[in-house]
Amino acid sequence: MSGDAHTRNLNDAHPGILNDRRTRILNDRHPDIPDNGCTRLLNDGHPDIPDNRRTHIPHDGHPDIPDDGHTGILNDVRTRILDAAEELFAGGGYAATPTTLIAKLAKVPGDLISQYFPRKIDVLVALVDERTHVEENDQVDAVPGDPAGTLSRLARVLPLRASPAMRRILFREADTHSSVKERLGRLNGELVRRARFALGLALPGARGDAARLEVAAATFAAILIYQENLCQLTGHQIDPDAVAELIAHSLV
Image 1 (cartoon, rainbow, N blue to C red):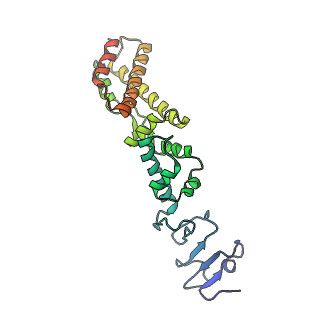
Image 2: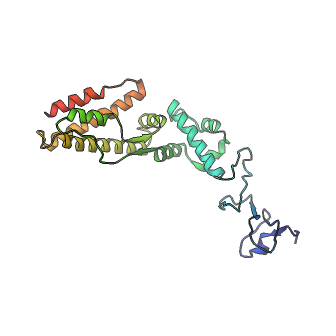
């Protein structure tokens, strides 16, 4: 058996663990102790073995990608791919962005993207799932007797947590994948719910019946979403105060 006091075959210490020529365990101080903080497992052929503070797996397949030694290369590369895709999808659109361009901007080998995202559409789905969030709560600033002011305040903050780039992607790619439609559908539903709740507080014993309040809330939500989409495309802004005044006038 080859080896010396510093290098032992992994099977010598752990006979139940499968070994091959590419797997070695190095123990610089105490060869009879399985692990003492100086042990490093070199595994070129088994990238699915997890890493921890005492076990480091070098990424031999792509030596040009740096490893920070803390968060690990896997999360770093995936984040860089998503960052690049977010910038490119927002700028030129999903259809006009090939994965080769994403790889170039992310500074990763082109074949590496498919290891994280087998299809390009998987990149878009990950962006929407991980980088957009519809906030749901019942905190509305409603003033009894002032439905216009109540809606006006509600119009100023969309319950959507997302970067400007992700907002552009959401509205631009509404027909690209069902996950995008689902997120926009949740945003619309939350806007309708908040507007209906706010109008109920602003118009106690409402002169309009429940059906009219529901229509007013749905109209308000539709205008806000249209405004967001229009702003992304043209930069044009609809006056939220005028919209609130118009809807409130229809209820009194």
